[in-house]
Image (tube, rainbow, N blue to C red; front, side):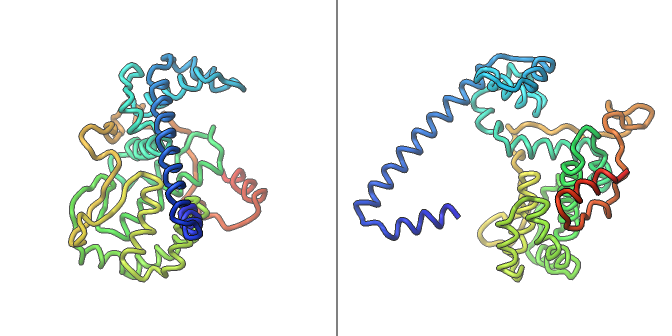
Length: 301
């Protein structure tokens, strides 16, 4: 939308006016980059705080800039499971954004869920009861949809799979009746579950008639939740593979999958979460008013 507006403005400008606009745009970009670099430097040098201090600061109605930067440093370190002392400006630049941290937490939740993605959906639904129930259900549904997308619409069976697949195999998966039905049902969910109206609108417009449009819808869900995409390895589109934001050697390392013998278990029982009884059917919420929806969610036992 912003690009369309920008292009429409350019069409009505003279050559000299365009040059002035381009120059102003470059100046804004340079200034913005300098401000971002300064902010990252301030976060990297912020005070190191512990969990107790972080909780106190989180509950303060008003925070100073120093306190907000200290909290940011704390949350980045906590997210990736590394000491605050080891955070560098480069690391914060590469992995300190909201999206990167969200993707890492979601991928980590799969690791905590079980030894394979087959049992992950059930485990994801076991959310701490302190969470808002509407948020809990929406997040669980995102995980379920993404994992089902991989299983139904691609040859990928595990989110950690980085094997390469031939184009004819990928096409066969995407164009199967089961896959088409799933993708078509996903279109309205892109707005409701993933808060991505653009993807929903684009899918409706394309009619999901091409491989590109099908992959576009699939990747909108996967990239928004995990920062991963199923894409061609080159312009020839002869092979496809799964690409993630944390695949490089210098990227933060995800923990190993938990088992019933892992550190979070006691006598074979997961001690981290309250156990919800939500089934996959109950995650499919019929449209209703916000008040009714919230009431229905809180009535689920």
